[in-house]
Image (cartoon, rainbow, N blue to C red; front, side, top):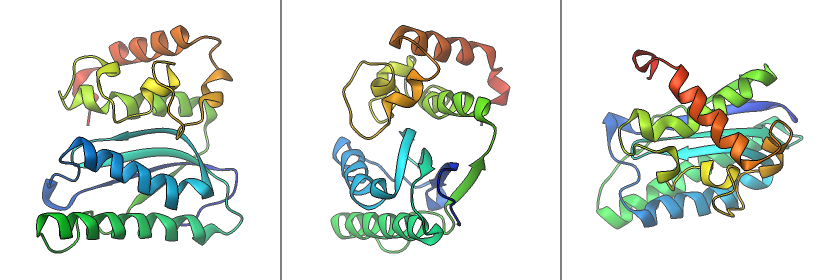
Length: 182
């Protein structure tokens, strides 16, 4: 993965063999804490969502060196896997070998992608309401929680109020046909 400073990327990876990656509240928080320490100093987080078997982050690279961010993501995944393996007695890789980093050049697509990322728990039938999933940045970006990982100012470029963020997210959820959910 090569990252350019100031560019937006959708970063995602899933577990090997659909294995549960985040099995408890503590494991979700542990991963986010590691992300904040390893990766966050090199990017601005626009949105994120952790799911039982995978994760999504929408970030803007802030690193001058393209390899630093990819190295830090690799360290994050290795160290998280190592901790889980020690804690559970499992062996081997937890995540698929290659983390995907899709360059996002269309600024209007960014808002759609943020909503897509937040809607993952609904599509997976883990919750019925987007605000019921606590392992995403939706609660922070909609003003329901005061988390510090996601950049709340980004959304305020497009929406004046938290209610507008919520309304946009709900409208987009209703407009996408269920057969398009992946």
